[in-house]
Image (cartoon, rainbow, N blue to C red; front, side, top):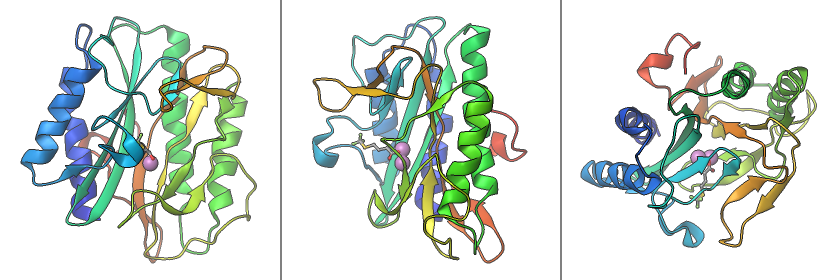
Length: 246
Ligand code: MF3
Ligand code: CO
Ligand code: CO
């Protein structure tokens, strides 16, 4: 898990300088795909239940599972979530990040910032003896305090030999409910936070999930390990080691 998660984090670092106005999401896909293959790994999304590409690219009002396309060219003011999952030595590692493209409006920049904070508030709840519901409770509170909504149809998940395993990590909830966290468990937290209402719509491609009201949505994801005394965030990037940048 440490090796595959480090690779996923590394790929996020590799793609970051390419996320600029003028680049297509397909070009970003190809760079990630080639890098992952070069490292002797496999991009988990490719052919996963028929997903056609190697990463997910979710632009603006796309909540998650956006499909890279040559016609989706980034422009100033966009936000783009890149979700990278690697399969290395039989284990999956999963991480995503929402990038600001050029100059983004202050309103949208705040959405992205608070979403990142939601992920880390969730991570702070992870410890043996805690409950999965503790994670959703703090995420929900921070999002709602800022006037945002939390997507409920898609959630974090156990991860390891399979891409998606038990337990489901819902991003809303009540403290003290759900599965108990135990040392050795690995799962993701990946809150999707909307500027407007929480409701989703699935596009005809059967993958792309957008907000029903067309307002922007942001997301961040890490894979973590429950340790004997807390949490180890396995997909953490070097620039995140002090926890307050994105
Ligand atoms: N990486 C996504 C997650 O965080 C899942 C993508 S599934 C795909 O769980 F098929 F769309 F790639
Ligand atoms: Co995930
Ligand atoms: Co993911």
